Image (cartoon, rainbow, N blue to C red; front, side, top):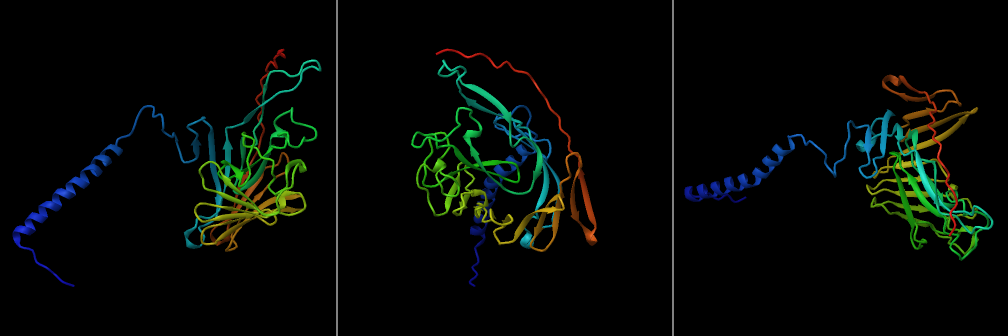
Length: 328
């Protein structure tokens, strides 16, 4: 290593240069730190409002979600966070759908009606795994019934969604296929066409998320016509993945450590067991009708810990005027 000595004059000049540069660089940081130390008050149009770490408030529609942690396993190998069981509440209790139908044989149609139905995502539930859900528009529109007429657009009725453990719902589109403009397709996850209107595909179906989350879903093909038992893999943007379909669901991290879910029926007692690669487990024991649920975990010296969850139903009803038919 070669060491050079500076003359006093040059050294002094260089020292001043560094002092000036450091002052220039550190001044914005100091100002930023002073600004951040002052609490912001008033209404912030683009702000996200949270009182604790338990709730999330959608700043677009005001939807409230609560996630109450119950039990969790220790971190896995490589420091990967262990699985956890949350009680999740979603304030989106209702969904609305627009449909038309004939009010009278002599009237071709009535004005569009908006129907309010219970949301699949609303209320309380346990949150710990991933759920594939095929949405069918025939479940929402009364004017879509009977046999499907091929090549008339009536076969565009299915949409793939995945519910994440945090309660969020992500919509997916199949690669290589087009919709009818409303997000619904005429191809099912197993590669078969809706209603048998055209030949399908025998290769795996590949889906991608449409909300900027960079998720990829691959569903294998089989010949039994039931898509829900087909092997599938969800690829996550952090390098992890989730598998399921024909086997217990597994969640892998990017280092290939995994957690597996088992749905058990022990003499009519329904349970979900969550087991990691080291054999540590959590159990959700679902009680019958009016009976409470229990969540079990094991701590130091294998001491059992238990959480009791009592469920109740609260109904809020209001009578609406169905309106009248209007002639066109």
